[in-house]
Image (cartoon, rainbow, N blue to C red):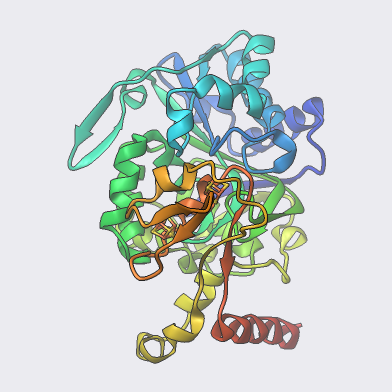
Length: 381
Ligand code: SF4
Ligand code: SF4
């Protein structure tokens, strides 16, 4: 059986326009009633990684979330918005995230609840928010971004945000290899499976996402589907990748959790070809994983794709220290310093540095792979 993904063009965050395009997208899939058959309570889970302003493009845009709220409320459901940011300073200060990201304004304007308190439940080795049990439906509303560890953060990875922050740090420490980490993300996705995924790809992020080190890219895309894996396949396609280049897709497909092959996905709405970005700047980690294991063994030392502190920007706030799962960062002369002998390249520090002082460095192999990728795409044209 085929799955369906609605893709629609939208080049602005103007509220009425976003609402219109989202409404059309849902209609193309059969309308709200096709998915929300029972229950009354819907939780919208945007990607609120940190307390940054909407124009930074790190968090799901407030007008995107507001448009979803309006549509779901109009259909007669009770709506709430919630996320658990991945940084210690914000765990007990969600209000700061909600305010900076524009969610507080959305909640006030649309008279919906922003959740700040949760208990956690543990099932089959996965710990996740009790919100999942308290609501009848979840809508995953991610921002379309690259990710230094998982290549893409889309519909599936977004659900990792419903796990407790300290648990996330432990998981980063436990699942060091990209494929093992993807398996863990899929286990979380299974427990927190959304009824619908609606992706904010109007302004996406390429390069060293998903935070301050990434680069914003106008893609002008809204993608909606009941199948989170299918929607991530579509995002991979826009990036110029194959669905299984995304480790969570590979694992999710293996477990038959959704449809990942493009030939089994029916695209409705606009032509997907219109959104493809052949020059999409891929995260270096992806390029390295394309090498066969045998070659990687010898060449990995030339990749040197690692976090790097920009000492000119670092203000010594210590946030990366609190969020490093291996505790390998310390302050030296009021600047962060990484002990590379123990660093496992999980890039949690990159995600959580609030001012973009944590960057990446790349060795000659990465530069060579980037050139190869550019050449491959040039030839394909
Ligand atoms: S690298 Fe960023 S998070 Fe770490 S101490 Fe410097 S400014 Fe703070
Ligand atoms: S320094 Fe950064 S990349 Fe290295 S282990 Fe710590 S958080 Fe992960």
